[in-house]
Length: 587
View 1: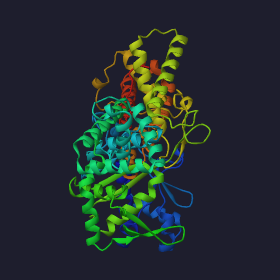
View 2: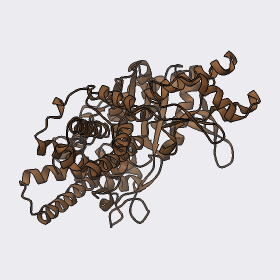
View 3: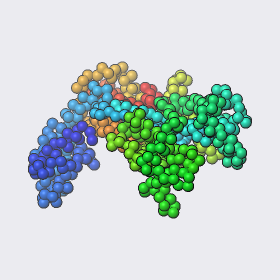
View 4: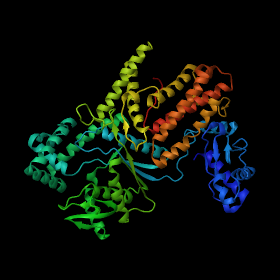
């Protein structure tokens, strides 16, 4: 709820009490945005809900409330419509004052959090010795955007990359490389990531088919866990090689992360099992130590256990996740822990959250949140894959977006008979290509699958990054053409005269409400929807006045329209930056 809506809600609550007595203190006035602009900006529906309680007709109740309602500083006189809706229309002078206030505010009217919290966002999480692929796209982009929004609001955010860097697979890979490429275990950068992935696949085939090799691999795991110098050195080299490859992608996407892999929590795993035993939650089942869960059953309808220590004494993902959760609460002192993973892991999170709660590890002031997302699909509606059926490498996907943008831009420049340097073309292609991929993902409801289409995401029309980057660049073009320094525009300059100016003004003032909603529900697509609608409203304003009419208008209209242009550009720039998208002054 934005500041204006809050003020109106308070006034309505006071009017209800004044009209019908203190017994109705705290009654929700049911204040919502008007469904149709011709009825005003807000609509209070409380009269209908009070009809039965008060034994009166809704219109009579609405009339009594309006008699006691003082919103004269904010709204035109309230109107009663239909069976008893109270319609409220904001005064133009009020809107002008609000815009003049945010014009001087670098945060555009979005306040910092009143009580900043330590928040952890766990996202991206690739596996060592494997390449990042399209399956890592959503976690990386959604997690980064959530972190950016929380940071902007003033929260103390720890961005964690919980990489898969421990376990049986490393014994398997090291054992195989000892046989076929021992240099990779002693020399840095002896393999590139593609070769490493190829060796990993061959090692897995060997592991699945050869019992003797399985035992050799298990011995390597034992040596790794025991800290054997040669095995530990080999493991570190493999991790460093993967990190170097990951960083190329993170740099392309402008992603900042702190790596804290599964290996970090390895010394804490035995303590997890020990404490669960002390709490009386552990049950031995077929040699494994388990916690039985409520609400989860197997195919036979029997309670489903969460295994925290296998029958051979080893640990699994759940044990590591429990250890990391405890560490994040006890050592990192996090108050909200956000896990950004695919929806398919929903049961896993529900299960280990339940175990942690049963064990009493979750204080009342700590919130655990799983942020699930759907799949990236190809245009055939199936999982997005290469023509050969392989998983699409994330690096290839990003390079393809940039390459297509480069080709489209060169064709457009040729059509416009416009000359630009190769440096300009490369930079625009990079920014637009990467932004298009990010925005196409973030603009979807994250809980849904979506179809990946280069053609749609790179379109200059519609709900795409190129469309909004073009709107921003168009505004900067007005500045260049008129030799205008937006920062030097006068204060108290906004005058709203035309309906397109009023519509744009009202939308500019909703930024705080939108960011606040994303902070709570962690749905970045709400911010995308807002920026898209804002862009459309600016274009309606622009089409009404045209850039020439903005610059050549008489004062005070000229400065007022320039302020609206500037506020739109600043809002787009801020909103896109919270999505991890860079703007361009020219396109």
